[in-house]
Length: 482
Image (cartoon, rainbow, N blue to C red; front, side, top):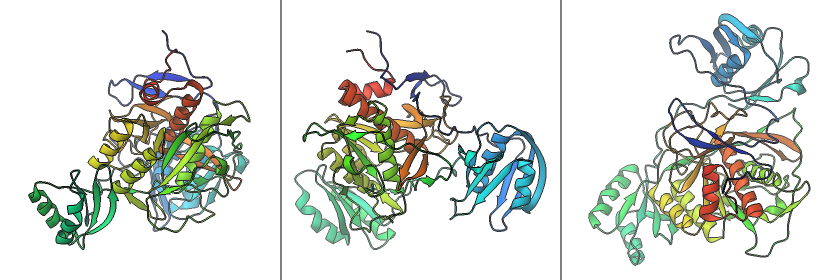
């Protein structure tokens, strides 16, 4: 039977994802995407390392050497150098030739932008904004996405270990931890695993050797997973409210999407009636500031915005969001906490688990927990990473996870996004959400992953696809005919 396309969501193949001849299936949302297109990025010329735009943050001066560059390329270099959020009026098209060194910010922008107008909005580091427009600041709505800094090495927590115990030997763990001089700060029942905290990295390394010598227990690294950041506010974009209502559903009839992430907020959002009680594995932490939109909230809204596309305008849905907080108020979490959060989501009945987070460390414990969840027909979606490289990002790179990268409106890999062999699908790497009535945007493979999680939830509701059948439909980008 020939494949058919999902209502209001189109799928297509993309044959190339870097210079390699890899066949990867990319999901491309056809409607509602072009609220603000991404401008293409170009890397600095390899043969001319001095070409481009440079920013001295300490002296707040600009240097530039460009010849006949299109405006999009100039702004991309400016965004990469300054880490500003740059919004530009769609349709601006000029070529720039300029050469200057260590001039003031205002003078440098004048030389780069010529007769165009701009507004600079200062902010905390990496949160300042530059609006580029002809006559109206409100017209600057198209986001220039800068590539993030280069990839970092796996960040092992040096004074911690994960202790793995075979079933039936859990009672011996406390005695072993005491002998090793470790404090047990976390536990998992199935598979049995314990988070051990030591007084120093040296004590942890000595314990690693002692654990190996038991011949019974084994030690794993506990990796640090950085915070995915916060969505950025916009001042000049009208974002429609969520046109969706929760459909009453009995327990067991709900479609549950778990958001394993930073805290998901209720106040100031349209999420309240869609949210299940929060599961927190982050310990006792203060709630996020009420005026700061969290990454988890942005992911939850992005998922529901995608679900709304499969429903009639103003319609209802049995989809519910299960917030699983693995960060609390901390700037980072750990692979042990992520494993705990995933296990809690699976045990709470999640149909889909959204993992818009990740790092370079492939934790065996996280992998084992995902494998157990997949055996229970849970579908996992993971962010491929916001580095333009081909090295794996975990948990997305585990084979049981559908790895999602970000693509441009034209269907090409976004210039900042990972495009390694482990990537399965791509989706728009930009979403817009509302918080206290104000518009925000989220950029990256995090947003792309949440978009696909929303598609997955919609397929459960509209097509009845679950488990391996749903996972296959997402990986292939097409739906089987019943």
